[in-house]
Image 1 (spheres, rainbow, N blue to C red):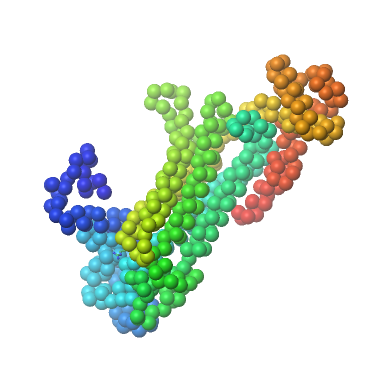
Image 2 (cartoon, protein in one colour):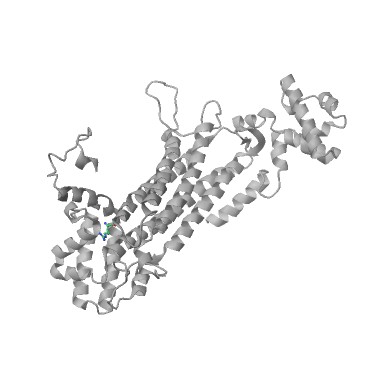
Length: 467
Ligand code: ARG
Protein backbone atom coordinates (compact mmCIF):
# COMPACT_ATOMS: atom_id res chain seq x y z
CA UNK A 1 0.00 0.00 0.00
CA UNK A 2 2.09 2.90 -1.25
CA UNK A 3 -0.32 5.44 0.25
CA UNK A 4 0.62 4.20 3.67
CA UNK A 5 4.33 4.07 3.23
CA UNK A 6 5.17 6.85 0.79
CA UNK A 7 3.98 10.34 0.08
CA UNK A 8 3.43 9.55 -3.60
CA UNK A 9 6.89 10.78 -4.54
CA UNK A 10 8.55 7.80 -3.02
CA UNK A 11 9.53 9.37 0.29
CA UNK A 12 9.14 7.09 3.24
CA UNK A 13 6.62 8.21 5.77
CA UNK A 14 7.69 5.88 8.53
CA UNK A 15 9.19 8.74 10.51
CA UNK A 16 5.98 10.75 10.51
CA UNK A 17 2.84 8.79 10.44
CA UNK A 18 4.35 5.61 11.80
CA UNK A 19 5.94 5.32 15.17
CA UNK A 20 8.43 2.95 13.52
CA UNK A 21 7.92 0.62 16.41
CA UNK A 22 7.92 -2.99 15.35
CA UNK A 23 4.17 -3.23 16.03
CA UNK A 24 3.40 -0.56 13.42
CA UNK A 25 5.61 -2.29 10.89
CA UNK A 26 4.06 -5.58 11.86
CA UNK A 27 0.60 -4.25 11.16
CA UNK A 28 1.68 -2.74 7.86
CA UNK A 29 3.03 -6.02 6.54
CA UNK A 30 0.34 -8.15 8.12
CA UNK A 31 -2.85 -6.32 7.21
CA UNK A 32 -4.86 -7.79 4.34
CA UNK A 33 -8.28 -6.20 4.67
CA UNK A 34 -7.41 -3.84 1.80
CA UNK A 35 -7.66 -6.74 -0.60
CA UNK A 36 -9.39 -9.62 1.19
CA UNK A 37 -12.51 -7.50 1.72
CA UNK A 38 -13.40 -8.81 -1.71
CA UNK A 39 -14.04 -12.14 0.01
CA UNK A 40 -16.76 -10.64 2.21
CA UNK A 41 -19.69 -12.42 0.55
CA UNK A 42 -17.89 -15.77 0.61
CA UNK A 43 -16.85 -15.24 4.22
CA UNK A 44 -20.45 -14.60 5.26
CA UNK A 45 -21.74 -17.59 3.32
CA UNK A 46 -19.16 -19.79 5.02
CA UNK A 47 -20.01 -18.44 8.47
CA UNK A 48 -23.74 -18.95 7.95
CA UNK A 49 -23.21 -22.55 6.87
CA UNK A 50 -20.81 -23.18 9.74
CA UNK A 51 -23.11 -21.64 12.37
CA UNK A 52 -26.12 -23.58 11.08
CA UNK A 53 -24.16 -26.81 11.26
CA UNK A 54 -22.86 -26.04 14.78
CA UNK A 55 -26.43 -25.47 15.98
CA UNK A 56 -27.76 -28.57 14.25
CA UNK A 57 -25.07 -30.83 15.67
CA UNK A 58 -25.58 -29.32 19.13
CA UNK A 59 -22.05 -27.91 19.33
CA UNK A 60 -23.67 -24.53 20.07
CA UNK A 61 -27.18 -23.84 21.36
CA UNK A 62 -30.08 -23.12 19.03
CA UNK A 63 -30.41 -19.63 20.59
CA UNK A 64 -26.78 -18.76 20.01
CA UNK A 65 -27.10 -20.18 16.49
CA UNK A 66 -30.06 -17.92 15.82
CA UNK A 67 -28.37 -14.86 17.29
CA UNK A 68 -25.35 -15.50 15.07
CA UNK A 69 -27.55 -15.89 11.98
CA UNK A 70 -29.35 -12.62 12.77
CA UNK A 71 -26.06 -10.83 13.28
CA UNK A 72 -24.61 -12.18 10.03
CA UNK A 73 -27.77 -11.07 8.19
CA UNK A 74 -27.37 -7.58 9.66
CA UNK A 75 -23.74 -7.52 8.53
CA UNK A 76 -24.81 -8.59 5.07
CA UNK A 77 -27.17 -5.63 4.95
CA UNK A 78 -24.46 -3.27 6.11
CA UNK A 79 -22.22 -4.53 3.35
CA UNK A 80 -24.95 -4.13 0.74
CA UNK A 81 -25.62 -0.61 2.01
CA UNK A 82 -21.91 0.22 2.04
CA UNK A 83 -21.97 1.01 5.75
CA UNK A 84 -19.96 -1.97 7.02
CA UNK A 85 -16.86 -0.66 8.77
CA UNK A 86 -13.81 -2.32 7.21
CA UNK A 87 -11.09 -1.64 9.77
CA UNK A 88 -7.36 -2.14 9.35
CA UNK A 89 -6.82 -2.75 13.05
CA UNK A 90 -8.72 -6.02 12.66
CA UNK A 91 -6.29 -7.24 10.03
CA UNK A 92 -8.40 -9.28 7.66
CA UNK A 93 -11.96 -9.92 6.50
CA UNK A 94 -12.45 -12.80 8.95
CA UNK A 95 -11.61 -10.78 12.04
CA UNK A 96 -13.49 -7.75 10.75
CA UNK A 97 -16.67 -9.80 10.43
CA UNK A 98 -16.16 -11.46 13.80
CA UNK A 99 -15.52 -8.13 15.57
CA UNK A 100 -18.55 -6.56 13.98
CA UNK A 101 -20.66 -9.56 14.93
CA UNK A 102 -19.57 -9.13 18.52
CA UNK A 103 -20.54 -5.46 18.44
CA UNK A 104 -23.95 -6.39 17.08
CA UNK A 105 -24.88 -9.49 19.13
CA UNK A 106 -22.50 -9.57 22.06
CA UNK A 107 -20.71 -12.62 23.51
CA UNK A 108 -22.62 -15.22 21.43
CA UNK A 109 -20.45 -14.02 18.54
CA UNK A 110 -17.51 -15.71 20.20
CA UNK A 111 -19.09 -19.13 19.62
CA UNK A 112 -19.03 -18.85 15.82
CA UNK A 113 -15.34 -19.70 15.69
CA UNK A 114 -15.84 -23.03 17.50
CA UNK A 115 -14.33 -25.91 15.50
CA UNK A 116 -12.99 -23.49 12.93
CA UNK A 117 -9.78 -21.61 12.26
CA UNK A 118 -8.97 -18.74 9.97
CA UNK A 119 -6.90 -21.31 8.09
CA UNK A 120 -9.86 -23.34 6.87
CA UNK A 121 -11.94 -20.19 6.70
CA UNK A 122 -9.65 -18.42 4.24
CA UNK A 123 -9.14 -21.60 2.23
CA UNK A 124 -12.91 -21.82 1.95
CA UNK A 125 -13.41 -18.18 1.00
CA UNK A 126 -10.87 -18.18 -1.79
CA UNK A 127 -12.14 -21.50 -3.08
CA UNK A 128 -15.68 -20.14 -3.26
CA UNK A 129 -14.47 -16.95 -4.93
CA UNK A 130 -12.43 -18.87 -7.49
CA UNK A 131 -15.39 -21.14 -8.22
CA UNK A 132 -17.51 -18.06 -8.96
CA UNK A 133 -14.74 -16.59 -11.10
CA UNK A 134 -14.51 -19.80 -13.16
CA UNK A 135 -18.27 -19.76 -13.69
CA UNK A 136 -18.33 -16.10 -14.73
CA UNK A 137 -15.41 -16.63 -17.09
CA UNK A 138 -17.10 -19.59 -18.75
CA UNK A 139 -20.17 -17.41 -19.34
CA UNK A 140 -18.02 -14.66 -20.80
CA UNK A 141 -16.20 -17.09 -23.06
CA UNK A 142 -19.55 -18.37 -24.31
CA UNK A 143 -20.63 -14.81 -25.07
CA UNK A 144 -17.44 -14.16 -27.01
CA UNK A 145 -17.87 -17.41 -28.91
CA UNK A 146 -21.39 -16.36 -29.90
CA UNK A 147 -20.09 -13.01 -31.17
CA UNK A 148 -17.42 -14.78 -33.23
CA UNK A 149 -19.94 -17.30 -34.49
CA UNK A 150 -22.26 -14.56 -35.75
CA UNK A 151 -19.40 -12.89 -37.65
CA UNK A 152 -18.22 -16.22 -38.99
CA UNK A 153 -21.67 -16.98 -40.32
CA UNK A 154 -21.79 -13.69 -42.21
CA UNK A 155 -18.33 -14.34 -43.60
CA UNK A 156 -18.37 -18.10 -44.15
CA UNK A 157 -17.46 -17.52 -47.81
CA UNK A 158 -15.49 -14.26 -47.51
CA UNK A 159 -12.02 -14.93 -48.88
CA UNK A 160 -8.89 -13.85 -47.12
CA UNK A 161 -5.25 -14.84 -47.33
CA UNK A 162 -4.31 -17.65 -45.01
CA UNK A 163 -0.84 -17.15 -43.58
CA UNK A 164 1.98 -19.23 -42.28
CA UNK A 165 5.04 -17.33 -41.06
CA UNK A 166 2.77 -14.32 -41.80
CA UNK A 167 3.51 -14.98 -45.47
CA UNK A 168 0.71 -15.67 -47.94
CA UNK A 169 0.13 -19.40 -47.75
CA UNK A 170 -3.25 -20.52 -49.11
CA UNK A 171 -6.58 -18.74 -49.41
CA UNK A 172 -8.98 -19.35 -46.53
CA UNK A 173 -12.29 -17.81 -45.57
CA UNK A 174 -12.65 -15.21 -42.86
CA UNK A 175 -15.36 -17.33 -41.29
CA UNK A 176 -12.91 -20.23 -41.09
CA UNK A 177 -10.33 -18.00 -39.45
CA UNK A 178 -12.80 -16.75 -36.83
CA UNK A 179 -13.97 -20.28 -36.14
CA UNK A 180 -10.41 -21.19 -35.19
CA UNK A 181 -10.85 -18.84 -32.22
CA UNK A 182 -14.25 -20.33 -31.43
CA UNK A 183 -12.43 -23.65 -31.02
CA UNK A 184 -9.74 -22.11 -28.80
CA UNK A 185 -12.21 -20.31 -26.55
CA UNK A 186 -14.22 -23.53 -26.38
CA UNK A 187 -11.20 -25.37 -24.99
CA UNK A 188 -10.60 -22.48 -22.59
CA UNK A 189 -14.14 -22.84 -21.26
CA UNK A 190 -13.43 -26.55 -20.87
CA UNK A 191 -10.34 -25.82 -18.81
CA UNK A 192 -12.29 -23.53 -16.45
CA UNK A 193 -14.96 -26.12 -16.10
CA UNK A 194 -12.36 -28.81 -15.31
CA UNK A 195 -10.80 -26.49 -12.72
CA UNK A 196 -14.20 -25.82 -11.22
CA UNK A 197 -14.97 -29.52 -11.00
CA UNK A 198 -11.70 -30.33 -9.23
CA UNK A 199 -11.88 -27.42 -6.79
CA UNK A 200 -15.42 -28.14 -5.69
CA UNK A 201 -14.58 -29.78 -2.36
CA UNK A 202 -15.14 -28.32 1.06
CA UNK A 203 -12.09 -27.37 3.15
CA UNK A 204 -14.24 -26.07 6.04
CA UNK A 205 -13.95 -28.18 9.17
CA UNK A 206 -10.25 -28.87 8.70
CA UNK A 207 -9.87 -26.20 11.40
CA UNK A 208 -6.28 -25.07 11.97
CA UNK A 209 -4.72 -28.13 10.32
CA UNK A 210 -5.60 -31.34 12.17
CA UNK A 211 -9.38 -31.40 12.22
CA UNK A 212 -11.39 -30.88 15.40
CA UNK A 213 -12.55 -32.75 18.47
CA UNK A 214 -16.06 -31.31 18.14
CA UNK A 215 -18.69 -33.55 16.52
CA UNK A 216 -19.09 -31.41 13.39
CA UNK A 217 -20.75 -32.48 10.15
CA UNK A 218 -18.58 -31.50 7.22
CA UNK A 219 -20.98 -33.07 4.76
CA UNK A 220 -23.67 -30.68 5.87
CA UNK A 221 -21.54 -27.57 5.32
CA UNK A 222 -20.36 -29.04 2.02
CA UNK A 223 -23.94 -29.40 0.82
CA UNK A 224 -24.94 -25.97 2.12
CA UNK A 225 -22.10 -24.35 0.18
CA UNK A 226 -22.67 -26.29 -3.03
CA UNK A 227 -19.59 -28.50 -2.70
CA UNK A 228 -19.57 -32.08 -3.92
CA UNK A 229 -17.89 -33.44 -0.78
CA UNK A 230 -15.61 -32.46 2.12
CA UNK A 231 -11.89 -32.48 1.43
CA UNK A 232 -10.53 -35.76 2.75
CA UNK A 233 -7.33 -34.53 4.40
CA UNK A 234 -7.32 -31.63 6.82
CA UNK A 235 -3.67 -30.73 6.17
CA UNK A 236 -4.35 -30.62 2.47
CA UNK A 237 -7.53 -28.65 3.00
CA UNK A 238 -5.78 -25.71 4.68
CA UNK A 239 -2.60 -25.73 2.62
CA UNK A 240 -3.72 -26.52 -0.92
CA UNK A 241 -3.76 -23.66 -3.38
CA UNK A 242 -3.48 -25.72 -6.53
CA UNK A 243 -7.15 -24.94 -7.14
CA UNK A 244 -6.16 -21.29 -7.56
CA UNK A 245 -3.10 -22.17 -9.63
CA UNK A 246 -5.20 -24.33 -11.91
CA UNK A 247 -7.71 -21.54 -12.45
CA UNK A 248 -4.83 -19.12 -13.07
CA UNK A 249 -3.27 -21.53 -15.56
CA UNK A 250 -6.57 -21.69 -17.40
CA UNK A 251 -6.72 -17.89 -17.29
CA UNK A 252 -3.17 -17.61 -18.58
CA UNK A 253 -3.87 -19.88 -21.54
CA UNK A 254 -7.10 -18.09 -22.35
CA UNK A 255 -5.26 -14.77 -22.19
CA UNK A 256 -2.77 -15.95 -24.77
CA UNK A 257 -5.67 -16.74 -27.10
CA UNK A 258 -7.20 -13.33 -26.54
CA UNK A 259 -3.82 -11.78 -27.15
CA UNK A 260 -3.39 -13.55 -30.48
CA UNK A 261 -6.80 -12.40 -31.68
CA UNK A 262 -6.04 -8.90 -30.42
CA UNK A 263 -2.76 -8.93 -32.34
CA UNK A 264 -4.56 -9.95 -35.53
CA UNK A 265 -7.10 -7.17 -35.07
CA UNK A 266 -4.26 -4.68 -34.64
CA UNK A 267 -2.66 -5.98 -37.83
CA UNK A 268 -5.87 -6.23 -39.87
CA UNK A 269 -6.97 -2.72 -38.95
CA UNK A 270 -3.79 -1.05 -40.22
CA UNK A 271 -4.32 0.93 -43.44
CA UNK A 272 -1.74 -1.40 -45.04
CA UNK A 273 -3.87 -4.49 -44.41
CA UNK A 274 -7.20 -2.71 -44.34
CA UNK A 275 -9.11 -5.97 -43.74
CA UNK A 276 -11.25 -4.66 -40.89
CA UNK A 277 -12.33 -1.41 -39.38
CA UNK A 278 -12.88 -1.12 -35.65
CA UNK A 279 -15.83 0.96 -34.55
CA UNK A 280 -15.27 4.40 -33.05
CA UNK A 281 -16.29 2.88 -29.75
CA UNK A 282 -13.14 0.76 -29.70
CA UNK A 283 -10.59 3.14 -31.19
CA UNK A 284 -8.94 6.31 -30.04
CA UNK A 285 -7.51 9.22 -31.97
CA UNK A 286 -4.08 10.74 -31.74
CA UNK A 287 -3.53 14.13 -30.16
CA UNK A 288 -1.15 15.10 -32.95
CA UNK A 289 -1.89 12.93 -36.01
CA UNK A 290 -5.45 13.60 -37.18
CA UNK A 291 -5.69 10.54 -39.41
CA UNK A 292 -5.01 8.01 -36.64
CA UNK A 293 -7.49 5.37 -35.47
CA UNK A 294 -5.62 3.53 -32.78
CA UNK A 295 -6.81 0.07 -31.75
CA UNK A 296 -6.14 0.72 -28.06
CA UNK A 297 -8.68 -1.80 -26.79
CA UNK A 298 -7.04 -4.56 -28.81
CA UNK A 299 -3.58 -3.48 -27.71
CA UNK A 300 -4.58 -3.44 -24.06
CA UNK A 301 -6.26 -6.81 -24.41
CA UNK A 302 -2.96 -8.08 -25.77
CA UNK A 303 -1.07 -6.43 -22.91
CA UNK A 304 -3.33 -7.69 -20.09
CA UNK A 305 -1.86 -11.10 -20.82
CA UNK A 306 1.25 -9.95 -19.00
CA UNK A 307 -0.69 -9.49 -15.80
CA UNK A 308 -2.46 -12.81 -16.06
CA UNK A 309 0.69 -14.79 -16.77
CA UNK A 310 2.41 -12.83 -14.02
CA UNK A 311 -0.33 -13.81 -11.59
CA UNK A 312 0.24 -17.50 -12.21
CA UNK A 313 3.97 -17.06 -11.73
CA UNK A 314 3.50 -14.99 -8.58
CA UNK A 315 1.33 -17.58 -6.86
CA UNK A 316 3.42 -20.52 -8.04
CA UNK A 317 6.48 -18.86 -6.52
CA UNK A 318 4.66 -18.14 -3.25
CA UNK A 319 3.64 -21.78 -2.96
CA UNK A 320 6.66 -23.66 -4.18
CA UNK A 321 8.68 -23.79 -0.97
CA UNK A 322 6.00 -23.92 1.69
CA UNK A 323 6.02 -26.75 4.21
CA UNK A 324 2.62 -28.12 5.26
CA UNK A 325 0.31 -26.87 6.49
CA UNK A 326 -0.66 -23.17 6.56
CA UNK A 327 1.98 -20.44 6.35
CA UNK A 328 1.27 -16.73 6.31
CA UNK A 329 2.87 -16.55 2.87
CA UNK A 330 -0.45 -17.86 1.63
CA UNK A 331 -2.11 -14.56 2.46
CA UNK A 332 -0.41 -13.40 -0.74
CA UNK A 333 -2.54 -15.81 -2.79
CA UNK A 334 -5.45 -13.43 -3.24
CA UNK A 335 -4.05 -10.45 -5.10
CA UNK A 336 -2.82 -12.50 -8.09
CA UNK A 337 -6.15 -14.32 -8.30
CA UNK A 338 -8.15 -11.07 -8.23
CA UNK A 339 -5.75 -9.35 -10.59
CA UNK A 340 -5.85 -12.16 -13.14
CA UNK A 341 -9.61 -12.51 -13.20
CA UNK A 342 -10.17 -8.74 -13.25
CA UNK A 343 -7.87 -8.45 -16.24
CA UNK A 344 -9.34 -11.42 -18.01
CA UNK A 345 -12.89 -10.26 -17.44
CA UNK A 346 -12.14 -6.86 -18.89
CA UNK A 347 -10.25 -8.30 -21.84
CA UNK A 348 -13.03 -10.77 -22.64
CA UNK A 349 -15.66 -8.05 -22.49
CA UNK A 350 -13.62 -5.68 -24.66
CA UNK A 351 -12.93 -8.40 -27.19
CA UNK A 352 -16.62 -9.27 -27.37
CA UNK A 353 -17.41 -5.63 -28.08
CA UNK A 354 -14.71 -5.34 -30.72
CA UNK A 355 -15.87 -8.47 -32.51
CA UNK A 356 -19.51 -7.35 -32.45
CA UNK A 357 -18.60 -4.01 -34.00
CA UNK A 358 -15.95 -5.22 -36.44
CA UNK A 359 -16.58 -4.01 -39.99
CA UNK A 360 -15.07 -6.27 -42.60
CA UNK A 361 -13.76 -5.04 -45.96
CA UNK A 362 -14.56 -8.22 -47.87
CA UNK A 363 -13.34 -6.80 -51.18
CA UNK A 364 -9.95 -5.94 -49.80
CA UNK A 365 -9.59 -9.27 -48.06
CA UNK A 366 -10.52 -11.16 -51.22
CA UNK A 367 -8.09 -9.11 -53.31
CA UNK A 368 -5.34 -9.88 -50.80
CA UNK A 369 -6.24 -13.57 -50.93
CA UNK A 370 -4.99 -13.61 -54.52
CA UNK A 371 -1.67 -11.93 -53.77
CA UNK A 372 1.56 -13.77 -53.21
CA UNK A 373 0.90 -16.86 -55.36
CA UNK A 374 -1.38 -18.29 -52.74
CA UNK A 375 -2.73 -20.89 -55.19
CA UNK A 376 0.65 -22.44 -56.01
CA UNK A 377 -0.30 -25.50 -53.93
CA UNK A 378 -3.51 -25.80 -55.97
CA UNK A 379 -1.41 -25.87 -59.16
CA UNK A 380 0.82 -28.58 -57.71
CA UNK A 381 -2.22 -30.59 -56.55
CA UNK A 382 -3.75 -30.29 -60.05
CA UNK A 383 -0.56 -31.63 -61.64
CA UNK A 384 -0.71 -34.61 -59.27
CA UNK A 385 -4.42 -35.22 -59.70
CA UNK A 386 -4.77 -34.69 -63.47
CA UNK A 387 -1.35 -35.44 -64.92
CA UNK A 388 -0.33 -38.04 -62.35
CA UNK A 389 2.96 -36.30 -61.43
CA UNK A 390 4.56 -37.29 -58.13
CA UNK A 391 3.94 -34.46 -55.62
CA UNK A 392 7.63 -33.56 -55.28
CA UNK A 393 7.92 -33.08 -59.05
CA UNK A 394 4.63 -31.16 -59.15
CA UNK A 395 5.95 -28.92 -56.35
CA UNK A 396 9.02 -28.17 -58.49
CA UNK A 397 6.92 -27.39 -61.59
CA UNK A 398 4.60 -25.09 -59.61
CA UNK A 399 7.63 -23.36 -58.09
CA UNK A 400 9.03 -22.72 -61.55
CA UNK A 401 5.65 -21.32 -62.62
CA UNK A 402 5.68 -18.95 -59.63
CA UNK A 403 9.16 -17.80 -60.57
CA UNK A 404 8.01 -17.14 -64.14
CA UNK A 405 4.86 -15.31 -63.00
CA UNK A 406 6.97 -13.20 -60.67
CA UNK A 407 9.29 -12.29 -63.56
CA UNK A 408 6.29 -11.30 -65.69
CA UNK A 409 4.69 -9.43 -62.78
CA UNK A 410 1.41 -11.38 -62.85
CA UNK A 411 -0.49 -13.69 -60.51
CA UNK A 412 -0.61 -17.41 -61.33
CA UNK A 413 -4.18 -17.19 -62.65
CA UNK A 414 -2.96 -14.62 -65.22
CA UNK A 415 0.05 -16.62 -66.43
CA UNK A 416 -0.54 -17.48 -70.14
CA UNK A 417 -1.09 -21.16 -70.95
CA UNK A 418 1.96 -21.13 -73.23
CA UNK A 419 4.13 -20.14 -70.29
CA UNK A 420 2.78 -23.01 -68.20
CA UNK A 421 3.20 -25.49 -71.05
CA UNK A 422 6.79 -24.37 -71.54
CA UNK A 423 7.40 -25.63 -68.01
CA UNK A 424 5.15 -28.70 -68.15
CA UNK A 425 3.83 -29.64 -71.64
CA UNK A 426 0.89 -31.64 -70.27
CA UNK A 427 -0.85 -28.60 -68.74
CA UNK A 428 -4.22 -27.72 -70.28
CA UNK A 429 -6.52 -24.68 -69.93
CA UNK A 430 -8.52 -26.69 -67.39
CA UNK A 431 -5.83 -25.75 -64.82
CA UNK A 432 -7.19 -22.19 -64.56
CA UNK A 433 -10.21 -23.67 -62.83
CA UNK A 434 -8.12 -24.20 -59.70
CA UNK A 435 -5.94 -21.09 -59.73
CA UNK A 436 -8.40 -18.57 -58.31
CA UNK A 437 -8.70 -18.05 -54.55
CA UNK A 438 -12.43 -18.93 -54.71
CA UNK A 439 -11.74 -22.27 -56.36
CA UNK A 440 -8.85 -22.93 -54.01
CA UNK A 441 -10.90 -22.37 -50.85
CA UNK A 442 -13.96 -24.17 -52.23
CA UNK A 443 -11.87 -27.26 -52.99
CA UNK A 444 -10.71 -27.72 -49.39
CA UNK A 445 -13.66 -29.79 -48.30
CA UNK A 446 -11.80 -32.16 -46.00
CA UNK A 447 -13.25 -32.28 -42.47
CA UNK A 448 -12.24 -29.08 -40.70
CA UNK A 449 -11.12 -27.50 -43.98
CA UNK A 450 -11.75 -23.98 -45.22
CA UNK A 451 -14.41 -24.67 -47.91
CA UNK A 452 -17.44 -22.48 -47.11
CA UNK A 453 -19.72 -25.52 -46.85
CA UNK A 454 -17.38 -27.11 -44.32
CA UNK A 455 -17.15 -23.85 -42.37
CA UNK A 456 -20.95 -23.66 -42.31
CA UNK A 457 -21.13 -27.21 -41.01
CA UNK A 458 -18.81 -26.26 -38.12
CA UNK A 459 -20.85 -23.13 -37.43
CA UNK A 460 -24.02 -25.24 -37.27
CA UNK A 461 -22.35 -27.66 -34.85
CA UNK A 462 -21.21 -24.83 -32.55
CA UNK A 463 -24.62 -23.20 -32.66
CA UNK A 464 -26.03 -26.40 -31.16
CA UNK A 465 -23.31 -26.48 -28.50
CA UNK A 466 -23.85 -22.85 -27.53
CA UNK A 467 -27.63 -22.92 -27.54
N1 ARG B 1 -5.52 -13.31 6.44
C1 ARG B 1 -5.06 -14.65 6.47
C2 ARG B 1 -4.83 -15.16 5.03
O1 ARG B 1 -5.26 -14.50 4.17
C3 ARG B 1 -6.06 -15.52 7.12
C4 ARG B 1 -5.50 -16.75 7.74
C5 ARG B 1 -4.71 -16.38 8.95
N2 ARG B 1 -4.26 -17.56 9.62
C6 ARG B 1 -3.29 -17.50 10.55
N3 ARG B 1 -2.95 -18.61 11.09
N4 ARG B 1 -2.73 -16.37 10.86
O2 ARG B 1 -4.19 -16.15 4.81
